[in-house]
Length: 143
Image (cartoon, rainbow, N blue to C red; front, side):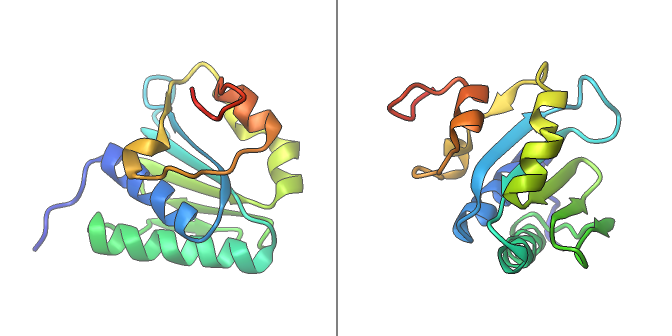
């Protein structure tokens, strides 16, 4: 049996999987110091219900294959506006734009450090103005 990947590695795998399905505004927050709920949140935006489903499917596939883990909980998949995959140490949130803007989940945890998704090999991530500001990005897209 293959060993389970670390929580940080799983967060990076999830971010790369979301990017592979063209999700935008991908943020990894290290929340473990503030909550016992998880060590990492991965938050991504998908344009519509179909893309939410595609992102969720790809995240599950890649974490199963590369991280050797399966979600212990799945929520919101019927509505497709905000889907959640709970892996215990990592929680993946996939929002449609309106819901992402309404809940602003990353702002609730803004004291937590963010992980640069370039660590996952994502080099051409797309960010809205609001999320780019949140991440402290410069106009050229660099941190």
